[in-house]
Structure formats: C-alpha cells, structure tokens
Length: 108
Image (cartoon, rainbow, N blue to C red; front, side, top):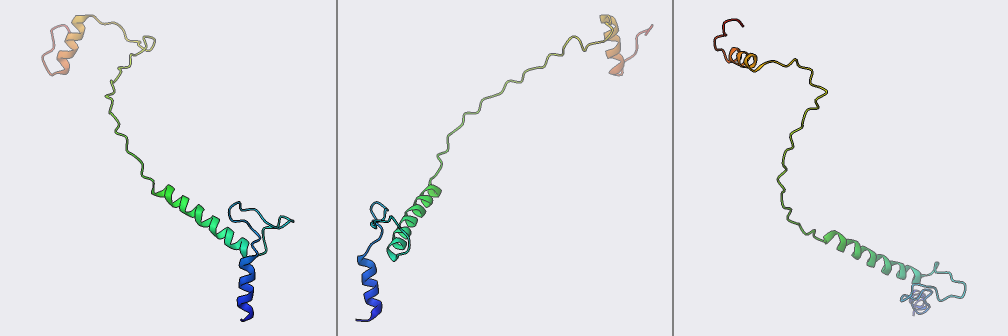
C-alpha cells in the first residue's frame, strides 16, 4: 500500500468531531486542524444552503383584498376664513345672469 492510502485511512478512522453533535472528541476541545472537521463543516454548510433554497422557493399566498369604496368627505370650510360681505338674494341672481351672458337688469 502506498503512503497516501494509509494517510487517508488514518484520517477517516480518527474523527476529531462527532458529526451527530458537532463537538470535538479530543480532550482539549479543539475542533480544527483535521480532515474530519472539514468534512463536518461541509456537511453543516450543505444543510444550511438547502434551508436557504427552501425559503426562496416558498410561494406567497395571495390574499384577495376586498376593495372598500372610500366615501369622500367634503371638507367644511371654517367660518373664520369667510370674509365675504353678505349679499342679498336678488344681487346673487343678478350676478349669475351676467356671468351666463344674459341681459343685465336695469339698475345693476
């Protein structure tokens, strides 16, 4: 057997990280520096990526919105802003008629 194969076997047999828990089996608690940790890290990353993809694939359910008809509220003008001189009804009528292009009354 070549040296390469021996090395590979040794790395596979001595796992520094327990894949089920993700914690180190070494007494010092070191989880880095071996091939086993790299494998563990890769497996964890793959799982994360899959989760992300699932999130992207989620379809949003469209809720049908009922359209509410908005009633337009008429704004009432405040009385304080009105500074018009009160005119009599007859005067108003006379003004309207002049705007529409009718004859003016005598005396206007």
